[in-house]
Length: 241
Image (cartoon, rainbow, N blue to C red):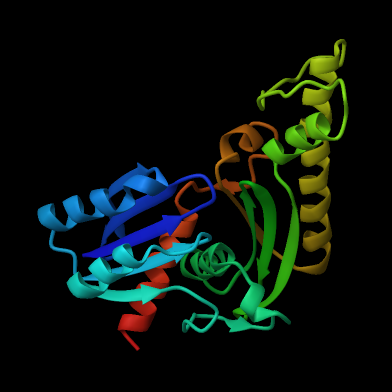
């Protein structure tokens, strides 16, 4: 079995794969990761592990994984199933590497645009020839709310809300500003990529997937586990090399 560890900005996701199928999935606060992983190892026959982290990696965690499994720590030097044309590969986020890999695994020989709606919204394009040139990064939903509150004196600190009414109050106007702004951004970027690439497949993932999937067209494929699928693919790709 493979253990997949995705440590994001706000929390960590743990998933156990048997071949290409998720058999167990958990979420964890950063401070509880090692404890939960030790429990998984005591209960399951885990042989291989991959860790993707946007945080500084804890040495105790890495040491435990090295001692108990075949470990891959994902970085810009890890072997991946695509040709990377990114001009600054050392700065390419490991989450984006995983997303592009998932696109290749789930939609082989297709042009794919992956939209990851998290702290930031990232747009990553992979061609049907498995070539990756980069994409777009913009502020996420929560960041847009925080920016309006932080850089003004009177605008309130609101929580993201799926609001479709009129802008008849300051709060409602802010909700519409964030939601309509990100909606037209995504729709415009999709249209731009569609104009340049035939038969484009669009995948939506990330923490704000649920809010955005209610706004966007149904032709977009929503997949909450896309990063996990990509990490498992990278792990198997390296093990089978």
